[in-house]
Image (spheres, rainbow, N blue to C red):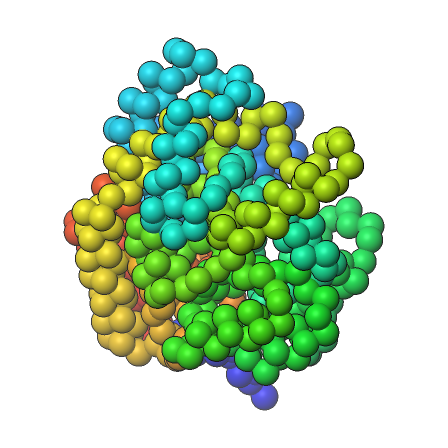
Length: 460
């Protein structure tokens, strides 16, 4: 009796796919001798042979080593130039080495990098963020993880409530509080979270995205300080909000005295003011991370006037001493210079118009490819961010999205694209365009994917 293929592999010839994978691994090894040599050397002093263990997630026989990057391309140490649709998993959404950011950083590094003193640049950046996102008061961090951690602490201090609520399958950096999933409808601390010693379930509530009834029931207890959410989920496979979800969810959240915190680190791909401004959302707090520094480590979080006043009051009423919020490098001069150049000179309305046009071209081309190869897959888009998913209709929550993930198939496709000069994000099938991306880059990606799909679907 033949075991039926999972949905993700229906329409594929899996025997051909496995043969293709073996050939692609051989081709990668032959084409990348310098990367292979460096990977061997790295094993002596780097855990897993890489500076961050996530860098082993590409599905390659050994770690690909970058030499330099510019615009929408990365050049590896073996001299291959790759059209880059990963863009540092959004960290390089401005493109690599954007000229305005390069100039600003070069100027600033000669004038000092960090002093733990206020600067005019910080106020300029805060004013720009306030104009874009509609929240008047801002603070800074070095990553979205830190920003989310700080906002959660401020929310608990301002409300006096101990819990937060997240959506199943969420990702908000590596803040421990969010590593809770729903498994068969029950909350479970994610077993992959290393070194966690206290029970996250005591202070984190998790419900499905797009489930208004579950959100209402969870908040009715009156002990949730904030709902921490992406406006559209982007990390378990993209999950878009249903048309009535956010209008009704915001009303529920307000009714129960809970704060709404929106993490726009990925969904800033929607437009200059992120998903929030494009869709008229009204959060109490908002987080932006890696894209807004043009590649430099930085993040920011903004508060409504009311929440800022409550947070300031909480700090003034607290005993003297460290608040547990911020680091000595927070809002350093180098990061502030990079953020100003990235926001004001690079991620402009004109740049977004270009990016959104190309993302539409990419999404349309993907749909045509999927139809031509008769695959039961769909395409989801959030502004400049596009993804193809191994299901016929877009998932509506984290459980549905998670059920469609197929890491073996993803790695097979990603390796095939890499060997054809195209880089996409190694986590699911996410692609991002930047101001330097061209229609030629898009066509290169589509042609490469067409070759890969032709090699893993039934021969005609």
